[in-house]
Image 1 (cartoon, rainbow, N blue to C red):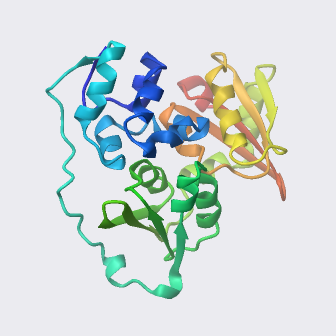
Image 2: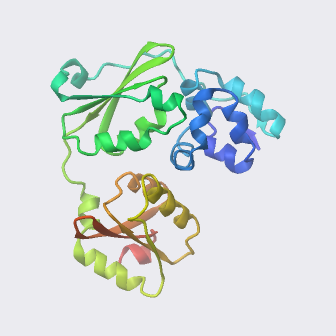
Length: 275
């Protein structure tokens, strides 16, 4: 398989599982890839160039480790411009300390813990106009991409080689038109009728974070064509929705009561999406 700096980490891992330990050996900052949920979400969005920036290494370091595994290195690749200065956004110039929540995840990363759950818990109740200041040892490129789909703008300020402050600003957004359509009761009823006798059901309410999302993604990986996944959840899993879009899947939601939400997830095609 031919690779370059634009090759996704997920592509490497799929082509050769041994690439996981090879990548981890490049930098201790990659040990978080051992977390299955983080690997599923972030590896699909992160290129070698992006990972090089996170790990304070180079694409050549990746090539050196991956070539013995049978990967063919294509030297004609796009280099990530790490020298370019990020323009300071207007919301950073008018920052109000009262609206800033600070979260230092360096200790968690050093101990091998995944801070994703804590970050999610911190930003979920944030109102528009508020800012999360994330203190980290690297620029969290995949997290920036993920939260960007949730209505957050990001700004990085590198203090030193191993200290980066990333600011996530929650924009003022109206209710998403897609979400409005997908939570419409008639949309739920029509879609449920269409997939009658073609459902796989899972209940993730009892699972601790981040197992619900991991369980749903695993079930979707094995979902037969023309079937839908019926999920019983405690809440609308907002961080799952961008993953569904990336997989060309759509969903319907039925909010039954506090702490009880039903989701219908299926592959989007002309027939199923029009019911």
